[in-house]
Structures are given as C-alpha cells and as structure tokens.
Length: 408
Image 1 (cartoon, rainbow, N blue to C red):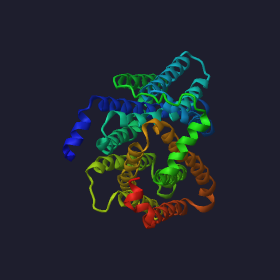
Image 2: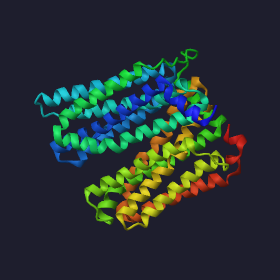
Image 3: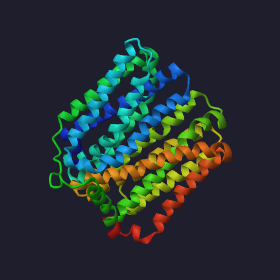
Image 4: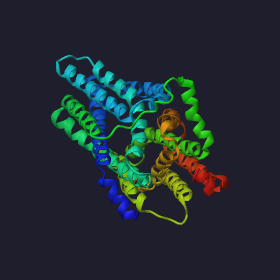
C-alpha cells in the first residue's frame, strides 16, 4: 500500500474521525476548564496558593489512581472507560456551574471538579491510547498517532486564548457550562466508535499479578523501558521550565503578558507542524537516529534559550523545539502500540504513564527550589545539557541502535 493510500484510508475510517473529533473537543474543554477554575478561585481568594492547592488536588490523587487502577484497565472495554471518564467530567462541571451560579460563595465545587479530573485522567489516557490500535491497521498507526497528536496541539494552541476571551466576555461561571457541554459532546462521539473488547481471560488475577505482568513487558522488551525513561526525562525538564518560563520572559527579557502568551504558544504551534511532518519524513538514517536526534535538538533548544536575550528569538527557538518533539513522541507511542500484546496494552501504558508523570512534580519542585539560588538561565542550560547527554548516550549505545533490539 502506498504512503498516500495509507494516509487517505486513515481519514476515511469513520471511527478514527470520531476519535479525533471527540478528543479535539475534550482538549478544548480541558483548556477552558483549567482557566475558568483557576480564574474563579483566584478572583475569589486573591491567592496564588489557593490556585496551587487546586493543582495539587488534581495531581496527587491522579498519581495514586495511576498506580492502583492501571493494571485493571485491561479488564474493561476501553471505549466504556473513556465514556465513563468524559461523562464524569461533564457531570462534575455541570454540578460546579449549578452551585456557583446559585449564589453561594463556596469554592468547594471548583476543588471537587479538579479532584474528579485528577481521578479520571489516569483512566482516560491509557484507555484512549489502547483503543486506537483496535480502530486502525498496524501500518497506519504512525499516521494515525501523528494526525491525532497534531489535532490535539490545535487545542493547546487555541484553547488558552479562547478561554481568556470567553472568561472576559461571558464570565468564568458560564464557561463552566461550556466545559460540561464539551465533555458530553466528546462522549457522544465516542458512542459512535466500536467497542474494544476487554481481556476476559484474567478476571481473577490480583492487582499484584497484573501489575507485575505489565512490568514484565518492560524487562522482556527493554526498548520500551528506555523509551519510557527518555519520556520521563523530558517531562522532568518540562516540570522545571513550568516554573521558569514566566519569570524568564517577564523578568529576563522584560516582556509583557502578551509576549508571555506568544512564548507559551510557540512550542505547541511548532509541535502541530512537526506532527504533520512525521508521517511524511523518511530517512535512511533509521528510526533510532530520528527519535534520539530529535531529543538532541530539543535539548539544544533549552541550552539556546539560556543564552537568548531577544524575545522574538526565544519565541522562534520554542517553535523549533516543538517542531522537533513529535519525531520522538509519535514514534514512541506507535512502538508501544505495535509491540505490546493487546491484552496487556492498558496496564503497560499505565505503567509508562506513571513513570513519565512521576518526574514532572520533581521538576516543578526542583525548579522552584533552585531558580532563586542558581538562576533561571543556568537552569535552562543545565536541563538542556542533561537531555543532550542522555540522547547522545543512547545513540552511542550500540545495543540500543541495532535493528534487532530496536524493532523488538
């Protein structure tokens, strides 16, 4: 089958289109809900700490659920897990809207919504990644992941400014209702997708046995573990820069909030274009060099930011960093979907997500602790240097780049 035919057939599959539309609406709703919740809490309390507590209420239970529920994902139909997640979110935002607009000054519905989001996100993500291989052919997975990723980046680019406009024009309370509708619509599109049968063979297995089976895949196929560790390193760097980005643009570069917004939009915009290029990019260098080479370029972008004194150059570097990123991320996701047995897909992807997500709060904490002591620029340079060193080590590690190991 030709490359053009494969790409066309992915979009011609109705179930794939429903997944894309549903996840686009879901991500837009998530962007709206994040800003609306944060705005309402900050407006009521005037405290950044109160907003931080909302994020902790989201993140800490999320990691706990990731660990406990991950092995059980394969026992359930992936589509139904996603439906449950989306409609739980819709109900939580609907409740929040009803309570807030009733005249009460209590903020508990906003924190409750954050808690629900944190509880269902670890179910939704591995289920959605496990569902895709059931909808498209194996040779279409790279294209399907790339185009889905590019669509989701559209939400990350357009969501924050759209949320700001809506909050300013109709109020944060009304935006909560729009978020509830978006999650409900996402669930509706999922209803139109076929079911993804659950693993019924191991219904009586304990959590420990299932979790151990998920871990065993990483030991049997070491490349999957390496890919997870590289993704975790990137998320650690993202955690550090979450603390650094705003003071860097506003302080070091003397930029206004408008330039902060442009800087933050640069990476997802670049990622959008990069994800469109992934399925079209073919190289005789091979998949390992493409993936790890993209990590080297991404790490160098952090280093370059550390030496940058011009706001437009910084925005351009962020855009280029986003352009390189999907050459690792999309290939990595596709490799998991191709080489993990379908009956283990949910628990393996859950373990992967747990490994990746656990490093971000460490990065956030470390960035907050060291930014005042070490300085913003040295931290950017140090984080970038670590990524470059790790990726170059992978390129030089002969066992990693041999076709026998790489293709598992």
